[in-house]
Amino acid sequence: PRCEPPPRTSTRADQQGMSVARWRCAAGRYLQRTLVLFFLVLALGNCRSDPNRAQHELEQKAASAFAVKLRAVLADSMAKLARGDSAAMQAAAQDIFMAAVASTKEGGQPVAFRRACVELGLVTQLVQLLARANEPSLQPARRSALAALAAIATDDPTSDVDNDHALAVCSAGVVPYVVDALSAPDREVQLSGAGCMAVLAEEPRCTKLLLNEGAVPHLLSLASYGPSHGVRATALAAIEQLSHDPDARETLIHLGGLEVLKGLSTLGGDTPLQTLSRQLLGELQEKQRITIAADASTRTQMAHETRLRYSKIWDQANVHRAYAPIL
Image (cartoon, rainbow, N blue to C red; front, side, top):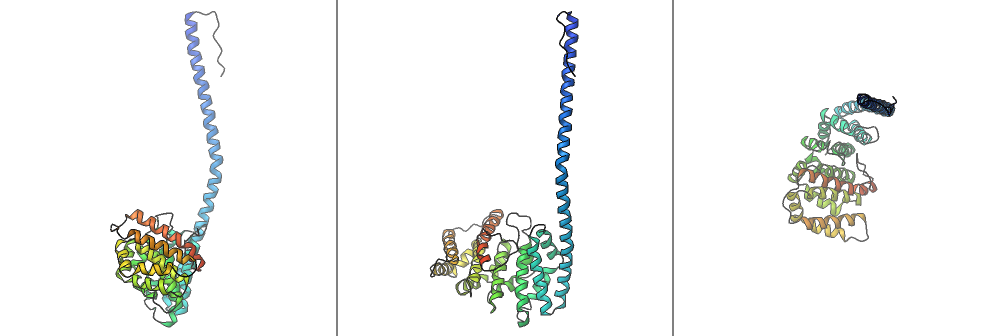
């Protein structure tokens, strides 16, 4: 509305009336502009919400498709593991590992996958497979089972959402079989065992279980005499994860860990293994006098940083992980 100015010749009453009229006019104009702005913002919001809604619907469809595929894979794997023959169990463990890797790709649901493996009893079945690990025909299945359990236990290092799966794997009784794998005659079993231990050692309570099971001397031996740089580097990763715990660090030093690292750091050539050994040696020497354990949040951050640092080495050694971005 347009507000007309008052006439120059008017009485006092007329001027008061015109003041009220002008105020009403201004208020009406303000209300009109406010309503226009409100509807404009509403229109823009609707325009913007349509693409968001479409994106959300696409994500829901992808999630539903993944859930259907996940149920089929896990049901099939459980049936194969229940059959008990070596070929079926190896195929099942390999399928679980590959599904874990796929779950971390775009559109996947890694937390849902790991939770399902725990809740459906797949972790328990894989541990039962490892209990028969001394049977020669089961060595390929043993490698696949260790890789599958490592994948289930591996969380997203950028989030604390699913950090409980490593503990669930340890609680299923896997620790003795992981430690035993470090001294297996099969190099691939050693590699899978060290990789699984490096993941489990990120969880403080798993660290205590590994320490009590005597993991340290096996790791030091594997780091010194492992059959390949990949095996040695993976053993170093597990050693570093364990070293975040004061008790484990004391055990490492007591059993000659510093001497082992000094030897590895002076090998001929400038290899990634040497670099990792020198770095870990410096950290152990620096932390020798630290006897207080870090709080849970700091420990988780340290574990994630350690894993990411080793990811490049694992990739070069062809050690596939469910979540190990390359730096």
